[in-house]
Image (cartoon, rainbow, N blue to C red; front, side, top):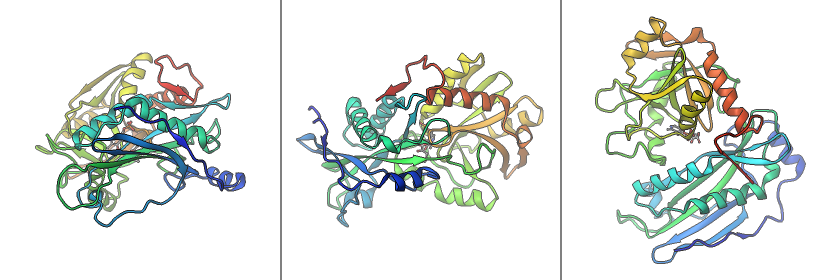
Length: 361
Ligand code: PLP
Ligand code: COI
């Protein structure tokens, strides 16, 4: 089945330049949305159809829409960056498109072709280019492609209609207050995902499952939850919306993909980028005992979190039922900041894109 090209129906009443500039001066994260959205429908027997770019607008949802009841929903997150010459590029949209297909397969949804995913993101960014924050700061345009069951009914089965949408939101730093280490709580009471479950898929249910644990972390005075494996509660998996890296001098280690954590695109990029910078990088198993012991004996020199929204964020204080300790004296570590700069320089077009990661519009 082929996919239709996108029918452009731009808004006749976009926000004024002054209104948009006021938002871009302090965008926050996920609070404001651009003037347009792209929608593509999928219907059993017909495939993908009615691809449109239209003004951003609320949807009308039937109370018996299957997504509201059984959560057949998946999403992605990627960013468009302004480059020094004013042009705009997205970071590895093909990787997001492939992960979207993986998520779709796990949730028994139709797979959107990679090129259609990229075409939909491109069409929106092209139309709303003025919303991509200027080069030089840390702000970018966050794209949120998502898809959900769009059939009415209460039977528990894969739907026979879906709606794919891309919206965009100008984004400043995910954690307000600049590059400041975050404090984390090692969650032992709750787990995010189990072997054979949906942990590797980017689906809303995983985030719903995280909220109570996040509230527990906040009650312990921490910014974020660290998820441990579901069976023994000993092996470190990831954070609520970020992967983790452990820095052992000039070797960096990230938890291996067990099926219950998300295969972050930032995580994957850093495995390569760290090698470019002369570090060893590997995937492996890190336990909470090891985390505490190696911090105390000085071999584990830094810990950081990484993801599209959060970029690279140092981890400072770690709290658990087993006590409390602090990484790198609560300061952003040297390797963390070096990797952060190297990644952002590629994304914002300040450094050469040697791996062909940037997708120019
Ligand atoms: N883990 C979770 C649970 C996430 O939501 C995200 C964010 O997308 C990540 C990790 C990091 O993934 P990426 O680097 O692709 O943004
Ligand atoms: C992202 O980094 O794209 C995420 O999805 C994290 C969070 C906003 C859910």
